[in-house]
Amino acid sequence: GAVVSQHPSWVICKSGTSVKIECRSLDFQATTMFWYRQFPKQSLMLMATSNEGSKATYEQGVEKDKFLINHASLTLSTLTVTSAHPEDSSFYICSARQVLGPLHFGNGTRLTVT
Amino acid sequence: GDSVTQMEGPVTLSEEAFLTINCTYTATGYPSLFWYVQYPGEGLQLLLKATKADDKGSNKGFEATYRKETTSFHLEKGSVQVSDSAVYFCALSGETSGSRLTFGEGTQLTVNP
Image 1 (cartoon, rainbow over the protein chains, first blue to last red):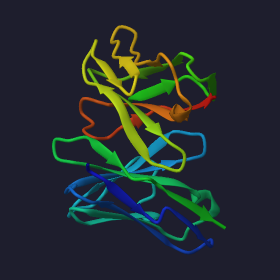
Image 2 (cartoon, rainbow over the protein chains, first blue to last red):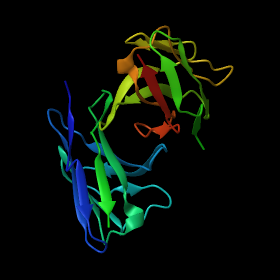
Image 3 (cartoon, rainbow over the protein chains, first blue to last red):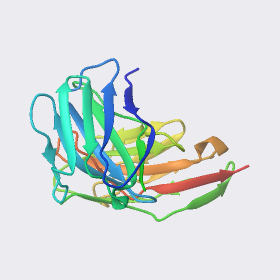
C-alpha cells in the first residue's frame, strides 16, 4: 500500500543550528503534503500545506522564515527548522494524499534542541 | 472555526473490557469525521471514517457513528485487546478544507492483560 517515509526519525541539534526533515511519498505522487507539529500529550497542529512547485501555505501564527518548506518534486517535501531553539523541540509529522485517495502519514520526526 | 473535543485520558482498561472514547465536534455544514490511531513511536494510521450523517465507520472491531444531531462521533469497541494500546485521535475535515484535518487532543488507551 501507499507509504509516506519521513527522515530522520529523530534528531538532536544544538541551539542556533538548522535541521532539515524530509517527507517522501514512496509509491504515489503527492501534489500536496501537510506538515503537523505535536507537543507532548497534545494534539497535532497543522503548520503548513506544502504545494508542489509553489509556495507553501502557512497557518496563522506559524513563522514562514522559521519553518522553511520546499516541495520540489511530486514525491518530496522538506521542512527546515532554521536557527532552532529549545522551544522548537517537538514531534513533527507529515502527511500526503493520493489523488482521490486517503491521507497517509509519516512516522514522524522527534526533534530535540539542546 | 472547526474544532474537535475528545474525552480526557488516559484510559486504562482490562483486556476484553468495553471501550468508549467520546468525541464531539464543531463545524459548519457537513464535515467528514475520522478516527486515527498512533502506536508508540509511529505515525498516525486511519482507523475508520464516516462522511455523512448516520454513517457508521468500522474497522478491526472498532465502530463510530456520525451523529449530526449531537455533533458526535464516539469510538467504541466491544472487547479490547492489549494490542489496542495506543493514542486515538478524533479528527474532522470540513467541507471547504480539503485534506486539511483538525484533530482532537488525543486519548491515550492502555489495555492491561
